[in-house]
Length: 112
Ligand code: 5GP
Ligand code: ZN
Figure 1 (cartoon, rainbow, N blue to C red):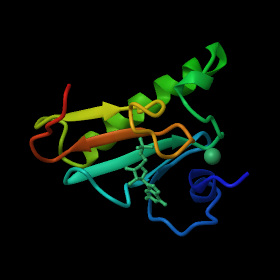
Figure 2 (tube, rainbow, N blue to C red; figure 1 turned 180 degrees about the horizontal axis):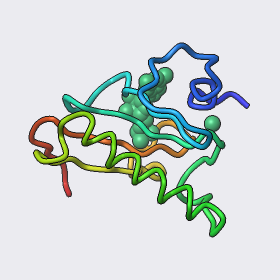
Figure 3 (cartoon, rainbow, N blue to C red; figure 1 turned 120 degrees about the vertical axis):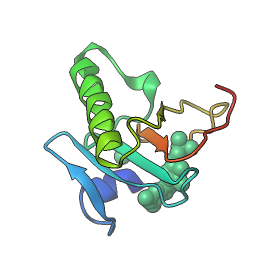
Figure 4 (cartoon, helix red, strand yellow; figure 1 turned 135 degrees about the vertical axis):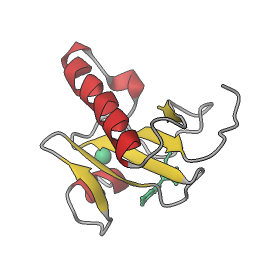
């Protein structure tokens, strides 16, 4: 399968890794939309939110908890941050491997 985020998770694409455990990996977005812009992804290939099921509930909780930990490590826990999953065309999902955006470090605009 030709998936850039699978390549990063499998260390086939050189990327500085901020956090890794057996289930997930975190790295900086190549085109940051905020001073801190980190992507947290499962190592397992899951294309989008639409492909999740009950068996993924623990993984999803861990992704969010790790985002919280990374926000603290990056010094943005108190100033604030957004966690975003884009799903599908209208949300602007470009990479079809589920990823949680952690955005912060300055005022964040957007529709929500
Ligand atoms: P989406 O729009 O799918 O929610 O977000 C995909 C994000 O992945 C974008 O913000 C984009 O800049 C980032 N991205 C795409 N390809 C790469 C890559 O090869 N390396 C890194 N670090 N980020 C990427
Ligand atoms: Zn993938």
